[in-house]
Image (tube, rainbow, N blue to C red; front, side):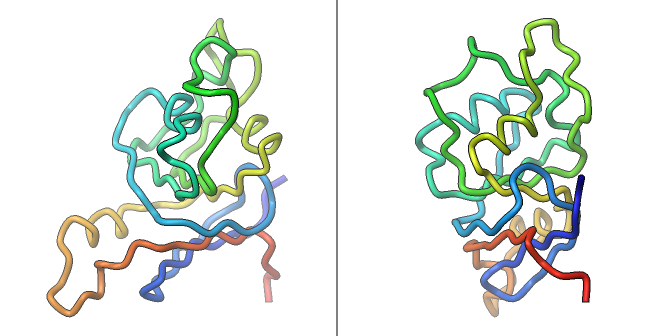
Length: 144
């Protein structure tokens, strides 16, 4: 079951969406992952420790998760942002869904459009409005 979620950047920009993965709050540096495949490898890569990974590919999770492809034995990201997570794992090698692994690892995620964030990050303004990267994801918010 999804609930309202927000991604808040240090500069005050707020991106609203729905929860995906574990419910709670995550804090970390927002970084982009531009790969169209390899999300399992990204999540389990220790170099992403403590970061909020923002996927730029619109569809994530369709191949599910398995025990053959991880870079390490656990998920290292502190938060995960996707635009359109797949509700079904359709690869014959999948043993579980992306969301199942995020929940098991306690990784807070948000399903939200990141296009404005991407545009802003590619073209930072001279006043620094778009230059901040620290981010917080919260899925434990009230609707009031």
